[in-house]
Structures are given as structure tokens and as C-alpha cells.
Amino acid sequence: MNSESRARVEAWLQYFNDLNISSFYLDRFSAPTAPENIPPGEPRPKPDTIFAVKTPAKDFNSLAQAAPLAAALPVVKSASLFESSNRIENDTLERIREDIGDCKRCKLCEQRTNIVFGSGSGKAELVFIGEGPGHDEDVQGLPFVGRAGKLLTQMIEAMGLRRDEVYICNVVKCRPPQNRAPEPDEVETCSPFLFRQLAVIHPKAIVCLGATAFQSLMASKLSISRLRGQWLDFRGTPMLATYHPAYLLRNPNAKGEVWDDLKKVMAHLGLKPPARR
Ligand code: URA
Image (cartoon, rainbow, N blue to C red; front, side, top):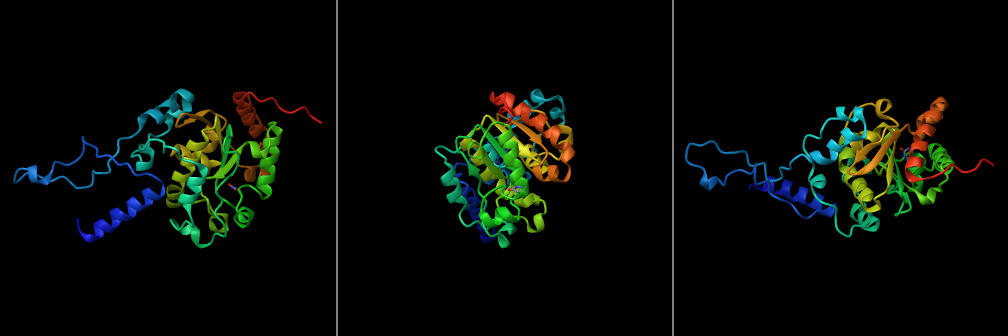
């Protein structure tokens, strides 16, 4: 291996080490034959299959049972090493936060004030996932504390829950400049930490707020308006997408649809709406 390739492999290993992934396996079925065993004149395989991982069809196939439309979701073409690895043993939210450190893994670090890790109960039965921190969240280091956050709090309370009983986080942990949507490389870099958070909390249900959260978890570009309010499957956990509270601030007429979605979540969790005062 030349020094440039070596440096690239080392950088990748450091990245996975930061994610607490240390076990790698060699795909025996697609691994190249050892070069010394290839007869002279035979073509040599490309030496890139050491990290080849088979598609984890099981998780994503179960989507088809969850909702007919979900069958249209594309199967993820090649799983990342993170997805192929089993749950990290003894992982904790504290350890994930430590691994994130003073993150400089993507360009969002350049303008952020605070990393917004997530807040709420580590034992929550319900997790809400938004897109990324806005201005108020960036300043305070907490998710959903601005105007959209106040509406989210009202939605949670309407379900008969307190904010500190659920867990709230985002697809990316640093504020995208001008509140733009996170870019694919930013989502790809940050989402392994979100997936670890979800594995640790192991909620009974996940609610994706808006298209970015839904599309990131499902690895799909399908529109949220088509799949909103349907139960899907995220690695064995029931997941439902609804509109983002910021969208509701601009389109209050959609509040009824969101409330219908939240009622499905309440039924799943065995919650009754609080009596009206
Ligand atoms: N919007 C989001 O998606 N997340 C936040 O934390 C705040 C606003």
C-alpha cells in the first residue's frame, strides 16, 4: 500500500474509531484472491473489496409489511460499515457525546456556536427527530427551543407527556448556515451518532419531524406528504413521519393532519389525551 492510500485508510479507521466501531470483517465472497495465487495472465481484481458489506435487506424489507407504499422505498444500495456493525456493547449517551468531542468532521463546524446533541430522557419511549439546530438552538446548545420548539412542546403536552419524558434531537448536530437544509455529506457524517443515540435509547416509537429526518432515516427521497402518518420501520423500531413544526407555523391548516399522526403515536404508546381544562 502506498503512503497516500495508507493515510486515507488511517483517516477512515480513525473516523470509525471515533464512532466506537473497531470490528471489521472481510467479505469472503467478494474478497479478491490473494495476488500471489493468481495465475500469470489472469485479470487481477480491484483491491477495494476489503470493506465490502452486503446490503442488510432484512431491516428494509420489513418496511413492506409496515405500509404498502413503503414497498416502493429503495433498498439501500451499499450499507455503511456502521450499519453493518452490530449494536455497540455498553454504549451510552455520555460516551456518544464524548466521541463527538469538539467535532470538526464536516463543514458545519465552521459557523456553529454549540453542538446540539439532544435533550430529554435517555429512557424515553418516544423520540422526536428534527432537521438541524436553528439560531436559538445554536446559541443555547439545546434542540427545539425557538418558535418551532415552543410549538413542539405544545404538541408533546397535548399528547399528555412532558418534554423531559421524551427525547428530542436532530439529524445534524450543528446549525446549517442561514438555516439551509443539511447537505448529504453532512447528514452522512453526523447520522451515525444519531443512530447510536437511537440504539441506546431504544424507544417504542420514533417521530420524524419533516422530510430531512424522514429521508435520512429511510435513506429515501420519497416525499413526506406521501408517507406521512404511516408506520414504517427503522431497524426494528416503529417510525412515523409528520410535518415539521416550522412548517406548521407557516401552514397552520396542517395542524389537524399532524394531530391525527400524533394520535396514532399515542395509541401505540397507550396514551390518552389529557382532559381539557
Ligand atoms: N428545527 C429543527 O429541525 N431542529 C431544531 O432543533 C430546531 C428547529
